[in-house]
Image 1 (cartoon, helix red, strand yellow):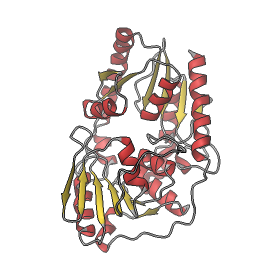
Image 2 (spheres, one colour):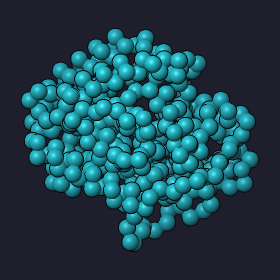
Image 3 (tube, one colour):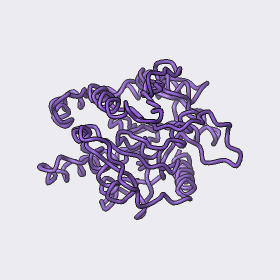
Image 4 (cartoon, helix red, strand yellow):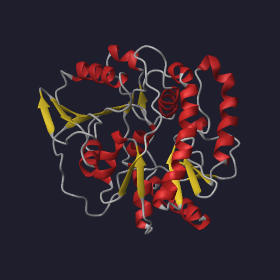
Length: 344
């Protein structure tokens, strides 16, 4: 949502940011000076032992209640702030009959666990019905064979209001005069993200595996609600959530990168032409698929969290990302946003 908001600001639009309170500090840092609205999303909760889809199934009635509630709350926000356009990230209830709306998702196909994959068509049909309620649906990926989402958004019969908008990244395209180096020492980078308790389990295992590394490891804690100071301990440097320019350099100059297989992180790595070892959150079928798919294409390495006990294995990356991938994405995004604004 950050690169989308920046693009809209470049197009002289007045942007409001609505999110859960845990993300508002991040938006205030990355997009200062806007109007911020507290608008919490659905938080299913996660288990230490059960796959993600089980708590999600149990809480389906709560999800449906939340969809109805956020749909009605959106009406009030539109009236209170005189909103003309609404762009939402995977939030099922933010469509409106009187206002133009865009729904962002990178997976019109929601992947099921392998034993239940034959039921995926039900999710595809329901998602298709939902997408049609919006003016446009934006898929942050490239439309052709060069794509990052595989069967999650390709090879499907998609509604006519779907538009591919290229990859999205907080990190700007390379400029001729780069900023001065903030991180000049040799290091590895670990990017922590995702829900608890799995985030803490992952952190503990990674620290144990990298404790004896000969070079420093930067740990990006993914806590935008806290300070940005760096804390040193042994051969680790811990940083809660650095601003984008610092984070870009911490990632782009790293010898090795270890991260969850979250799609936003993957897009940002691709925008910097950096590969990584992807460790999907256990039970998150989307991350498990993305790690497997991108590893099979030779773009990333992957490892299941349970296999980390055997050590870190960085397989040689076979391919590099096309040099014009950011350029293609910029053209697609500008075209899609132009269509949405023209709609209005």
